[in-house]
Image 1 (cartoon, rainbow, N blue to C red):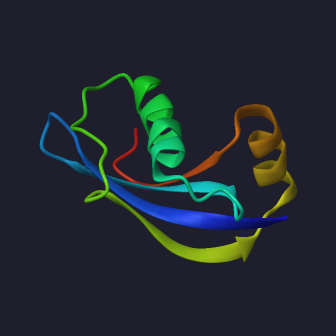
Image 2 (cartoon, helix red, strand yellow; image 1 turned 90 degrees about the vertical axis):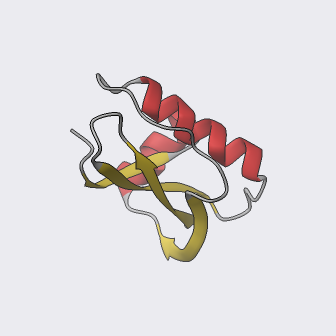
Length: 87
């Protein structure tokens, strides 16, 4: 499965900048859908964050999904790669 990687940055309430990637099937291009996946992920965090908009989330590239990515996408519609300040 080919996935689109959406490079995402969100300001945390404590001043740190979160960096994570939202991965979706490459045929999913609706920004509202992808932003909603990001918002769903942020709701699960134990800290407050800023808003997720087109300024913070942009398409980056396409890559081949791993088995773990495919399993998450089949279950939730997306997969998150946490890169920086996500804990």
